[in-house]
Length: 206
Ligand SMILES: Cc1cc2nc3c(=O)[nH]c(=O)nc-3n(C[C@H](O)[C@H](O)[C@H](O)COP(=O)(O)O)c2cc1C
Image (tube, rainbow, N blue to C red; front, side):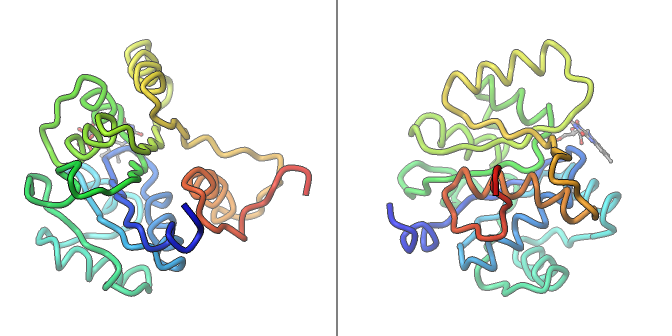
């Protein structure tokens, strides 16, 4: 797939109730800047965390959510479609829609566990299940500390199925001077994994 095709293909961006809402917002911003259409899925807990961590109180209705988010981030709302948690008729609920990439950022241990056992009880879990069964790209950005054996076993199970684990574990060897640089460290890793043009990322050895 060439770079142009990459930016035309939609990406499912799912946000769950783990700590790390700023990572999600930055990823949405960066994808929007690259002109990538986004299907946005928010868990109920993600809305609570967005309010707690970044004081973003989003309306319930999906279209209003997309508009409010675009307004808060200063991006074009036309590239973002938001879907309700039980919208089984949305494109991300079926393999036949052909969406090839999904990112769950941040990914809670609850969502991770439910994906690992194939629960598919909300649209995020169902979309992830579709990615796995269709052998498409699923990236999780898990966040919890400390990690229990349950969390680690679930991650191992999913990694063995080909799911990409990019934990929210920023490095400090680039000597970040701001919170933004720390957030970008994680978001850059995600963008590199979906092979997006990412000129801002610092490369090792550069
Ligand atoms: C402010 C806040 C921070 C949280 N941080 C985490 C976290 O880092 N990791 C995690 O797995 N759960 C965290 N939780 C708990 C999850 O939100 C909770 O388990 C929820 O049921 C997850 O639901 P979801 O997977 O549908 O989003 C946090 C909750 C709140 C309110």
